[in-house]
Length: 342
Image (cartoon, rainbow, N blue to C red; front, side, top):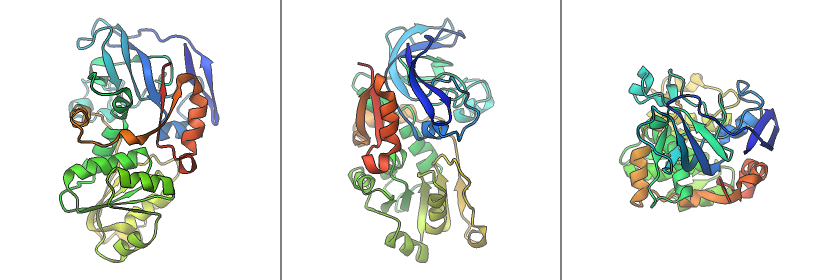
């Protein structure tokens, strides 16, 4: 098969790689019909995750067709259309039983494209398939289904739920990339008073308005007014930048919540010299994807206007170009870059 292979920091290539084979009775083999590039993949590419070994096929989000099923897989058959979750769940350990699948201690967690070969390929082996895939209804297009592999569950679980967004809240989202914009769409379900988005890219600020932000600006007047005034009830850090985290700490009100979504490759400063008295709760987290079935139903009934998050599509063989476009999202206007089997 052909696959996107990591060769070390800042070196990837679209190569010929061995076809995946069944290794455990709980595995399935999936033909990848669509996959995508994630911000976490860029962190791997730039050497921020040294545990990822050269030779690894990258990628952890996909939709596709089941080709082969292990003898201990009970909910899938060859031919089923599935969403491959970014997080693999053994379904047995205490973390998985507590729906904290991102913390799986039974061999799962974020392993695709990290510890084992991932989804940026023509085929992928999916471990713990009964707990790590979801059937894709025919009414859900490929691209929308792909957003359920990681982007939408991350926005809900790590941003909206961890941030305790509620009716009447003022919510600030720092970073208008795919996850930040998905956070806006999901947060609107909870009837906040207003959602303010800040980013350095004018194109992404325009996209924020399309998914439901009440205001969008480069960091400036509105954030300063919140900092000097009542503050935001919830500040959600979705940029992955140290300055973005600091901005959240300045915008949040006393007694408010900061929910960190962004993947940080560099240290961020925690200014306890002015935070110590604010009674602020700060949450971090790895997505669990336990919310995917609920989000799938919302998507199926048109409650999540997120189709516009997919801005660029390529064939699988243009994977290197997709990385280039996605990495320059602030200027290219790229949000979610999707690659389709042709």
